[in-house]
View 1: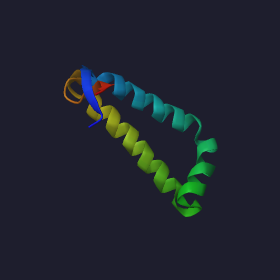
View 2 (view 1 turned 45 degrees about the horizontal axis):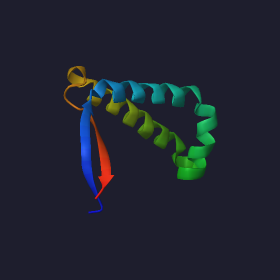
View 3 (view 1 turned 120 degrees about the vertical axis):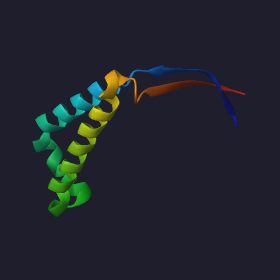
Amino acid sequence: DDVSIANHWLVSGTHYARTSEEWLKRMDKNITSIRPIFEKTYGKESATKWIAYWRTFFISVAELFGYNNGDEWMVAHFLFRKK
């Protein structure tokens, strides 16, 4: 309990939805550079599976946070201050 909330605000989920869509585009565009990293991280035999998992994650985030014009799932920001 070293900090307290000084302020907080909500941002429409559409911002995070667009961010996730851009991450997906960037991953797809750079897949030849990313695949070796995934092979090293997850194993050569599992890299394709993990690429699919990450693609699914980005698509899911975009759909969830974009739902209902971004008013269903939002992003909360908090400003903390020392007590």
